[in-house]
Length: 191
Image (cartoon, rainbow, N blue to C red; front, side):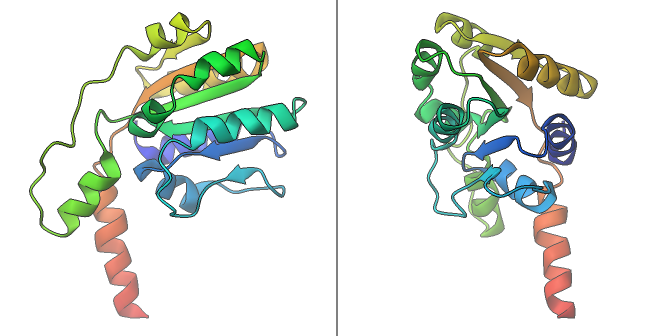
């Protein structure tokens, strides 16, 4: 799925007072540009402090503080794996939390930034575990989205069901260069 579609579908299922907690990664730029916030403190992000791994714990804390609200942690696969063991804590505490993993099987932002500077791509791709089985092993409920039209209903069901749900969605970052390099350069030149 392209990032714009993921952002659109997340915004369409989250209530105005629902909280999203973003980890750090390429997808975060897409959310920062395209996800409208309708209430204070409903978009938690580190604003480029490069704190990979913060999305899951931030979402857990939001779910603990505001159990009556819908909460979604949104993580890249690399950032998620930095604190993924906290799924056990979320399940043990009985939290209501949806964890959306934006999966590119790579350190996507580092890849993009190194590409901008002309560096060769080396060591940034990797194999992930089966995230559905991983979630199940901790007692969470795992979901895998394989087609764009599956994301929205999967998120709706997970948010309604309560408990800890993990949703693995593949991402296609092929538009990064056009949007973040070429279009931004063009806009900068016009200013």
